[in-house]
Image 1 (cartoon, helix red, strand yellow):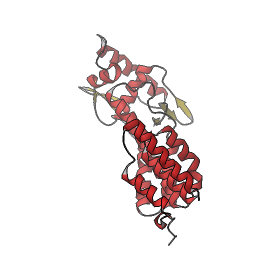
Image 2 (cartoon, one colour; image 1 turned 120 degrees about the horizontal axis):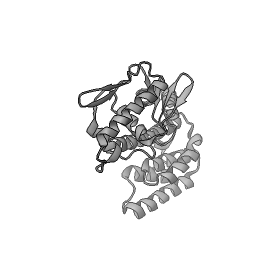
Image 3 (cartoon, one colour; image 1 turned 30 degrees about the vertical axis):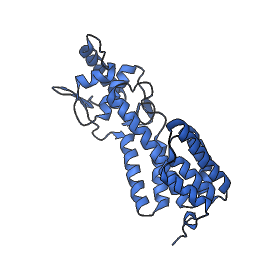
Image 4 (spheres, helix red, strand yellow; image 1 turned 60 degrees about the vertical axis):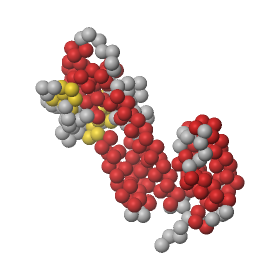
Length: 257
């Protein structure tokens, strides 16, 4: 049995995939899952389900959703119906050996960062690509309204973007800069206020003998940041701009030792 959360929420068992059609039951599972291994109180569930405007019989509704969720999980592979445990103050979801793609993502990121720190860029790239492959789409799209779920969705999106940055960095360190020009062009358009993507795009363009285009990227970043935030680019981006203007040797790909 495996919970898959990094995209549309589903539970897999053997070769079958199971999804919830009832949004409130799905929100209940999502809330219990991100708090797996600890008690989620009924009050927390009510907040995630309805915010600060719960219905009069919210507690009874939570009980119904838990009952429906238990039946769903039994059908999805929870033999014996032991995944959700009732506690005095609420409910606890126990993984008890079940897989969870969030744990797999965190492990792949941790391993990738360790390999990166050791200068093992090929292995780091494999780990970051593994992490990215687990991201199937927006997390909790359409159901993340409460504070805990909204916070988790924000965390997942930031981790995805960091993983993209690290994957690009690993490819660049391996001299595979031309592979990521298209990706970075798309990312700078999608996330125009994220300076790290501009910085990476400028560097790979420069190393691809496209100095003029690299300088144009800087001017675009400068224009967007001034228009949207009233700010100049960060000093790291300004330093890169000056280094490109000077064709500084520090920008050349380090020779393999």
